[in-house]
Image (cartoon, rainbow, N blue to C red; front, side):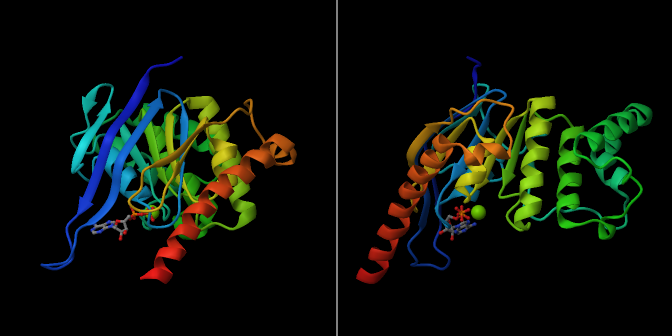
Length: 267
Ligand code: ADP
Ligand code: MG
């Protein structure tokens, strides 16, 4: 067993009301989490349950209102290059080529140009973008832009990659390809990946463990160890054990949606 890299205990996040007199929003409460080194942890939960809040806390963009959040035993005090974020919409510089976008961060930190370009070519090959290094973002499809974003994160070799519904705006075919890209990248670089999604199938294909969240205020409804062997591919979807696990997670999420609807009717 590898050691726990990220640990949350009793994590709580409350946002102040929008104007004076408005009740605060409790986005997360009593949230416990343990992510081991080199593991892929996926979070699934209904919309608005606090998934992005959790990612922002781990990224160090937000501070907890209460509870403990540590990486290697040290409190997360702010953003760090050890923890890189991949957003749903890749933020690439339109006037820079693929290679320039991928190397920009380390170049600004003064990393040797020759080494950097060699590393960049390697990660571009890993994400399947060999031959596209001189293209500009507008010349790429959505999936390819997302690969550039992943390459840009990889070239900085972070310990943890935080991904907030990174394939949420891609079409179904492209998502499947991106899952394969990510599985391949994980097998090669073995980063710890913290991946948020509302797609149960995506979570079960990618993850070692899946956290199912309750509706807001988000807490852990279930923690599931995903039993399927790696390397994984899309044939997994035809496996009856996969279908059964998927159905049970969907049923858990449905309980959350439906209890929310009943509340909405009662209000
Ligand atoms: P998810 O990513 O699961 O959809 P979020 O973490 O974005 O959920 O949001 C959880 C709850 O916290 C929502 O009710 C949202 O409106 C609220 N929220 C998120 N960010 C802020 C903020 N900066 N200020 C106030 N409320 C916020
Ligand atoms: Mg979100």
